[in-house]
Image 1 (cartoon, rainbow, N blue to C red):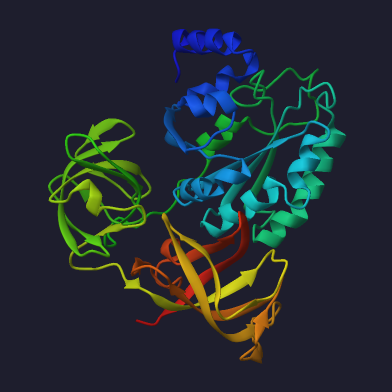
Image 2 (tube, rainbow, N blue to C red):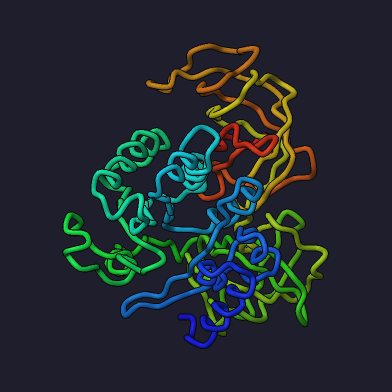
Length: 400
C-alpha cells in the first residue's frame, strides 16, 4: 500500500541517519521522535486491502514506557498479531519476567481480543537460519503462558515463522529449500481466509472515543462496538449527556455515509467543542444510554505485585479507551481459582495469583462502563501501577 517512491525516500533518509534497516518501520512511525528513537510511541493507523477484505492495521508500541498507548490500540482490535524475535537472546529478553511479551499477551486478552497470531520473526537471522528447533522452542515456551492468559491453543492461537526484512511468509511463501518444515499459509493468506466476526448492527450505538482533535470542527476517533452510525445521526455523548450530531464520517480516510460495527472511524461532530470531549467518553443512542458510574463491584485477578493489596490501594484503571485513577475501597471475598466459588469472606488483603471480588471507586468524576455480562467490550479492565500491570478484572455490578 506504500508506493515505491515513498519507500525510496524513507530509505534515503534512514541511510543519512545510519539507520538503514529501519526504513520499513517509518511507514507507520510518522513523527520525528519515533524515528529518532526507533521506538513506536503512538498507535500508528493505516489500512490495506486484499482481494477479499479491507483491513485496518493498528501498530501498537512494544516498549514498556508506552504500554498505556498500547492498551488504547488493543481495545480497538479484533485480531492481535504478536511479533516475536527468534534471534538468540532477544526472544529470551522479551519472555523473561518483566519482559514485554508476557504483558502484551495478557493485555490483549483483557482488552477482549479473542484470536492471536504469533509471528515468530527474524527467522532469517544468522543465529536462527530457519531452524525448526528454534521455532518449536519459542512455541513451547510461549504456549503454557498463553494458556494461562486464557487463550485456547486449539482454536485461538496460530504460530507462523516469518522474516520482516525479506518478506518471507508475510505475503508469499518461500522456497522449499530454505524452509521445508512449515507447510501452513502465509500471513496474508491466513487473514484473507479468516472467518468474519459476528457483529450486532441492530444493537444500540456504542463508540468509545480513543482520540480527539480540532480541524474545522471537532473530530473524534474510535471503533464502533455496536450499532450503525450514519450521517446526520443524533447521538448522546456520555458521561456529559451532551447532544451531538454526526456531520461527517471517514472510514479509513474515505468519506462514507454510514459505518458499521467493527469499523475504526473518524467522526466530525456538531454541537460540541473539542475541549468538552475526552478520551474515554462514549457516543451512544439517545434512547439507550451507556451506563456511567463512580463505584462498582468487580472480580479481579492479581497478576504481579510485590506487596499485598488491601483497601485504600490506589492505581490507574484502564477500561475500553478510558484511563482514570481509582482506589480499591474494600475486599468482599476471595474466590477459589479452580471452582470460582467463595473461598473466604471479608479478607483483609489479596496477594499475587489470587482472585477476589473488590469494590472500586473512581477518584475523578463518573466514567462510562457496562457490566461484563451486558457488554463485555466495556466491562473488562486492567489495573496498572508504577509502569506495571498488576491486575485484570471484569465489572460485576454498578453501585451508583
